[in-house]
Amino acid sequence: MIDSIKALPEGDERNRHFKALVNDRARPLADRIKLLVDGIQGGALPMRALHEAALPLIETEAGTNATAVECMLYSGWVGHQTEPDYLKTLLPWARRLVALAPGNVAVYTRGAMLSLSAQSYEDALMFGLACTSTGHKQDAIVRCASMLARGDDALTLTADGIGCVLPLSTQTTQMVEAALTHCSGQFTEMEELAYLKSRLPEGLRIGEVGGLVGNHSAFFLRFLKAGSLRVIDGDPRAIPLLQRCLSANNPDGASATSLELSWVVGPGAADSGANPPRQTVDALFPEPVDFFKIDADGGEIELLDGAQRSIAEHRPIVMIEVRPSTAKPVDDWFVARGYRAEKRIDRSSHMNVIYTPA
Image (cartoon, rainbow, N blue to C red; front, top):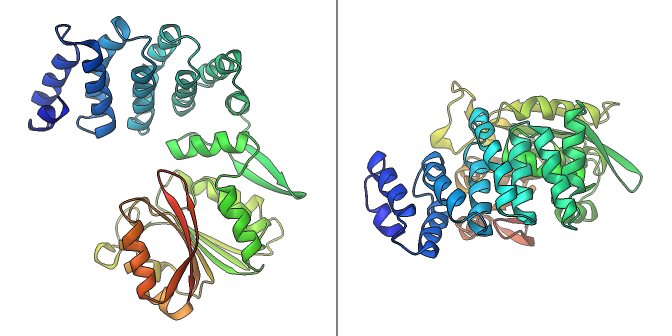
C-alpha cells in the first residue's frame, strides 16, 4: 500500500489518503499497522501527518501492538526535535500509551527519551521508573532526569583514575543518546576511544569535526593529552556545551584549544558569509593536524574533497564515521591517496573507520 501513497504528489492529498487508509476498518488491522510502520520508517509523509493519521488507530484498535506504539513514540521524538511545543503535545498521549502497552520496556524507554527532549523531566523519571518496574534496569534514565530536574547539567566520568567533565543536554536526539550513555557511566564509542588510546602517542595536534557535547574532546584532552585540539561544529546549540567541556577538561591550559561554529562542506558549497559559515577543512585547519576525528552525518565525500591539502601535505591519521551509502566511496577516496583502513568498528546504522597512510 505504501507504494500507492508514494505515487501521489506530496502535500495535503497524500496526507488525507494515507489517513483514510490507516483508519479504514474494512481493511485488516495488520495491513493498516504495516502501512503505518512503513510510512514512519520510509519517510513517505511529514511526521506530523503520520501522527495525526495514527493516533485514532493506536488509541482505538492497536494500543497493545508494541511495534506500532514504539514506532509512533520514536518517530515523534526524532521528527520533532526542533519543535519543543509539539513534543510537549505528545506527552499526554505517551502517558496513555503506557496503559495501552503495559510492561513494554521499549515503549517506556521511547517515552522517556521523548520526555527528556521536551524537558519534561518528571515524565522522564516516571517512564524510567516504569522500566525498572518491569525488571529492566534503566538507571541512566532515572539519573539523567533527576539530575536535570534539580538543575545539575554536568557529570564526571572516571576511568583509570582520570576524570572527564561532560555537560548534560537533551536538545537533540544525539544529545539525548549521549546523556543517557554518560549517565550510565560510559563514554560513547568507548571501543573506538580505547583503540585510539592504545594506538596514538600523547601530544598530537588533533582536529575534530563534529563535537556534539564533547565526549571525544574530553577524552582527547584528558587521556591523549592533546598538544592542541581544534573543534568545529555546525550546531549553535552545541557551542556553549563544547566551550564548557574544553574549559573543564583543560583547567591548566596544558593543551592549546580552539572552537569554531561552522558547517564543514566541500569547496563548491563554501560560503564564509553564511550563518553559520560554510567552510572547508582546508580553510578551517590552516595549521598541520596529526589526527582528525570526522563525523559529517552523511556529507563525508564533500567534506573530504575540501580536505585534500590537509590530507596530502600532513598525512594525518583519520577516524571518520561513514554510512552504508558512503562507506565504499570514502574507502575509495582514501585508497586513491595512499591510505589503508586500519580498523573498522561497525555500529549497524554507521561505521567508524580509522585510516592511516599506507
